[in-house]
Image (cartoon, rainbow, N blue to C red; front, top):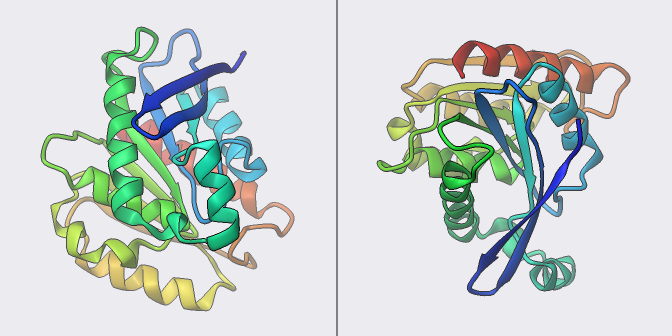
Length: 213
């Protein structure tokens, strides 16, 4: 499977992405990157490859332009601007709905870190039908006011050694009204760098998206 480069023009510049669309795919997962991460994140690329092998289309998309990314490396401000990231994600989602290769596909979000909050906020928008969400080491607590409006089936994945984030995910889990599940990956820290832990994330995500998309 070959990745197709995607450019989405916005007011402030261009957002770059990589689209993988297996021949018979009927659903697509849009990756919503976390703090300081982008379409070239090895962790998200690994999960995306697993999903593509399971016949799900995937889109690894930057939420910041190249100029914004350079500024964000210096200040760290934009990666926590959830309103901005949510608006960008909604724009990307509409683009995917109209794109020839993905038109008519069911849509899911895979969010990591602060990207999970943006994914949930975007899914809460009335006009935006999202069928499934996976939060990996996410900060869904940052989206708590929006969670009661999320209708997408939501899977919260956290590392067993990521104690603070486990507590924050439990807070979000308790107020989420849609179908939901929480999986704690034993021995994993926040970035799932321990051997075998990211593979567990990928497998859990594939099963969740396959079931709900």
